[in-house]
Image 1: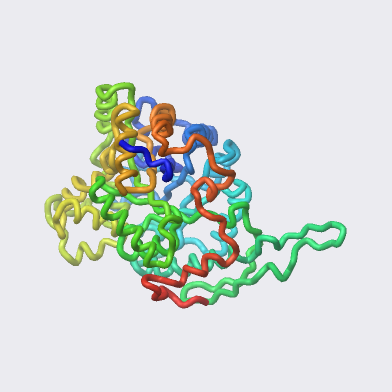
Image 2: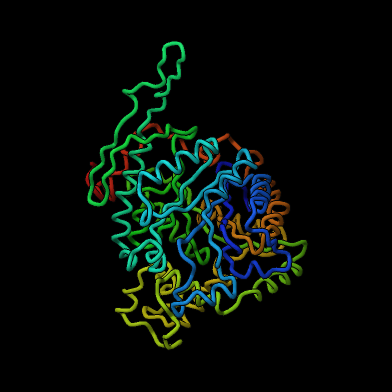
Length: 469
């Protein structure tokens, strides 16, 4: 394949602050480490990713144990189906202390936190990591999360995103509190900062009121990078408005090329530069010294999955209990509409099955939830894996990849040792970091205070999503 030297892959490590990776069976792997409740576990991963010149490690998260299947957590706990869920930001801090260039992203929900808290939390993290932090913006998924925060049920899908738009406006406004040159710190004159360059927000909207000013000055990269994963209609509009790094799940290259083009066009229609928005798709990699060994490893890894893994995590992501349903009975139109979790996930099953009303069996078979082929699997020698990744990249399927390990730490170590040098040899992945901050390494400009307002209210085709205020 021809090299594309002008454009470079984005590589992201897909992390979980839990007992397994995104692949629930990973903890059952014979080579999986079991010290996941220690800082050393995550610091080892961080050093490996930094050695491989990854852009960042990004932590997915949920605010509840998967317990919607049968309204019980017993199966989740017994089988270790993402049963442990620690807060990712203390872990992110431990990883930051073990690295100097690796970006670090954590997930926090707009549904169950307050804008001022998020603004202060991530602004402080970004300072402590010297401008290497990203916030993965989510609206959360299910009623179990709602119950942990004193709510009877999770908010309706589109309402969550309407609320999240204002949440982002409020957070971004707080991140504008301090202008870049507000700090003076002149001991002789006694002036600490220029008060005219520190501003109250005084936000009053439909969902939030927040005064400010934020008590944290701007970081080395201006403010944290925004990650988003919306693929549904309303979610995609939100992602195209706010996301600087967009995480997607494309089932194959053909679908990826189509959806990638649509997402980039949505970014244009939101009044933004598509070159300043990186779209990275999730994948698993199985790399070995020969095709035969890689295939044997893939079969072993695939055999680690259990049926309960899929059922438990399908209920979690769709906010629907499958335990009492006929396995082969199609969902009615009303039941499909009532699925209020990750609607993009629901829509993907409809697309892949070709059925507007799939059954539980269809959801299991076509989503491959909790199975190795839930994401595209690039398996083989380093050359074979690099060939597949290069094809996706060059043919317009993505800007990069979110690498999910089949087991930890070996999944990352094999990739860094074998595949990264092959990608570098082809000229599509860097050999050194470009700068000190995450934005520099992603090729994103450092924003000045107020820059986001120039496009944030443009909306689709110039029609504002909300009034500024």
